[in-house]
Image (cartoon, rainbow, N blue to C red; front, side, top):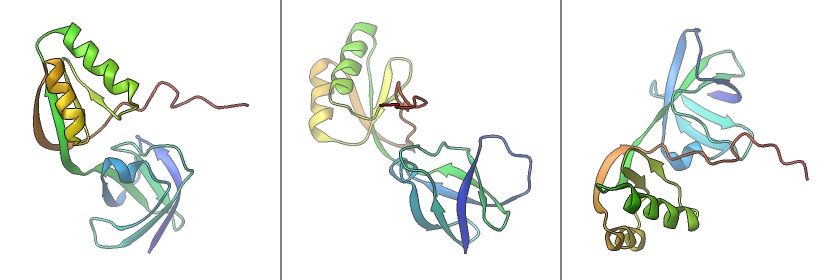
Length: 147
């Protein structure tokens, strides 16, 4: 069993021991028990509130290196052809504190029939896709709260 307490960022030149494939929700957790791609049990004990990045490296207590990979999962993919419609959709999702991945005139959210209907009513075309979901990390991801 590998126990992980250390994050190394997205650059590592050490030999890789295994990889772990995590959904977006799993990447937001500080405590996980799962199996690496090599079948070995991996237990992750990291600081809470900081999302693991796809491609990030971790180091086990015994000195082995593990890489985080994104898991393909179902998302709602919405797109439109004009920036005003797209901006309004992003505003309304942000106003609801929805995790959102943003591209050029497209966005992705976790499947939610109510939000999908809202996006359709705003003029976006929606569909379901199976991709690695990597939403924006937020404006305050690196901020330290000193209050």
